[in-house]
Amino acid sequence: MLKICATFLCAIFLSFNLVTANAWATGQFSQTCKNISVDGSTLTATCEEADGYTLSTTSIDLNPYIGNIDGTLDWDGEKFALTCENIGLAGANRLRAECEKADRQSSLGTYIDLNEHITNIDGNLKFE
Image (cartoon, rainbow, N blue to C red; front, side):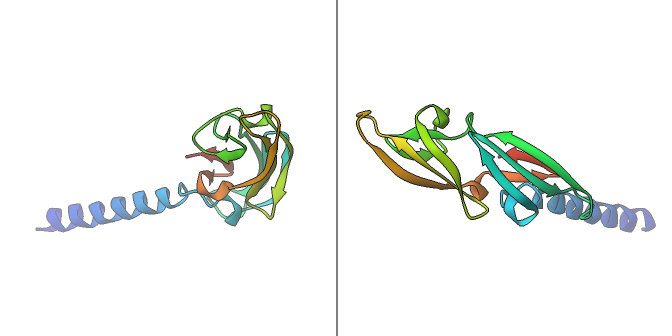
């Protein structure tokens, strides 16, 4: 009986640990990062590590994850920086840019919420 109780408690502990570990991997990087900036397609921030105290400066190239779809920033694409200019941030988590439309004659001001897919994993910016 003691073995069964110990096994049950261990299973509960492990499942709780998995849930809390995955909580770090749900986007929302801006909640645990500061000094957030963009230079071209590179997002840089100072982010908390898992201990909640240690800070790390980290960067991620957004070009492999964000595209320009007819003048609109979109997660279903890549290499947005090739056809967008005036790239920057609007607030801590919104990427803004002026992106060329498919006709290559006009451009649109567009935004995308980086919190949707960029996360802080133990002090490192990651795409998910």
